[in-house]
Length: 307
Image (cartoon, rainbow, N blue to C red; front, side, top):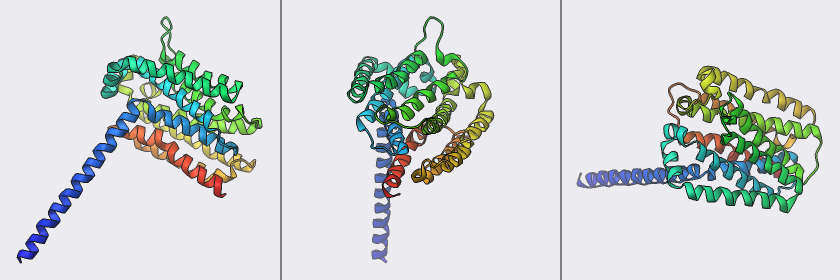
């Protein structure tokens, strides 16, 4: 009997120890993720992965220098946006706003360094790559900075279009800076990235509705409301189904067909999950939406090698 009691106490202590370990791991994971998102490293990694997957779709050797240039460009642009969005973030993302305010000088320095790095790496590979990398910089500047009384971000719907366009240009055109391709394939890849990244941008606007509304920024979720925004995003994601059928019929992306199907279903999942009335959106949005390119690239690279 005493032996059974001792074993029972031991098992309880072991269970509590395991729970404590799991809590510590969860806490550490949240801290790391929070740091990566606040510093824009996470979103910059997504920019790097978008470039990588573009090379995969074109079925050409990956140019990691150009992909790294995409990383630095994304890092610089999103940090610039954080500097100009402190008012909105003070309502939507308090911790990010505090971090930005506290480290403003370091962030400005990092923007300058990252911008030069993006341009220099592009220059090393191709002159045309510089023009491609400059495009999102120009969009990011006009989007974030108020010139007189005008700011691109203040026009309804333009914010999401501008951000998706900047990403899609890097995704679709960066590989052709070092490798030629036909117009049909370029157009198809551009459409895929534009739709995916437009949806992702609007999902982040869903999280930021309160702060955007209070600061007079009329995003699509602010203008349409949550239900209509969800319908719009579901329709847009559904356009990728005939896009995929057409691409397949024309002989494109055979080796990536299952990866692209996964990307479409992943999009449906994110839309349905984050466009609910009863959800409190936190870092899970960054993890799942920006992080969608992690499984897409991993699976895509596996299929590119095996198929």
